[in-house]
Amino acid sequence: MAFLKSFGMGRRSDVLMYDPHKLSSPQVFLLTMVIFLMIVAFIAAILTRQIS
Image (tube, rainbow, N blue to C red; front, side, top):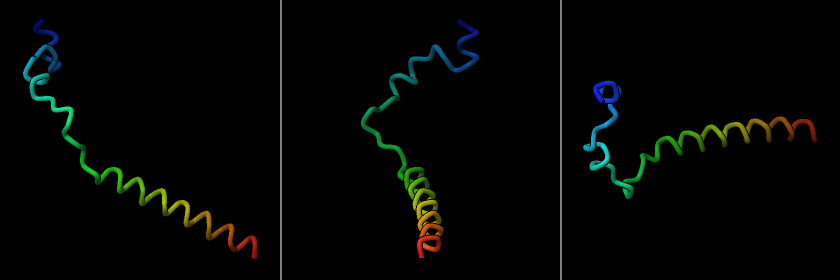
């Protein structure tokens, strides 16, 4: 049991502190959405030049 406690396992306080209704921060999702939109805009700019 001491081996599990050294890795942070085996504690019941972690289970009791878990809240399934708590939402994560939206910053991660916003960052990935901005990166996706930048990639799409870059591809659209390249395709627009090749089509014209």
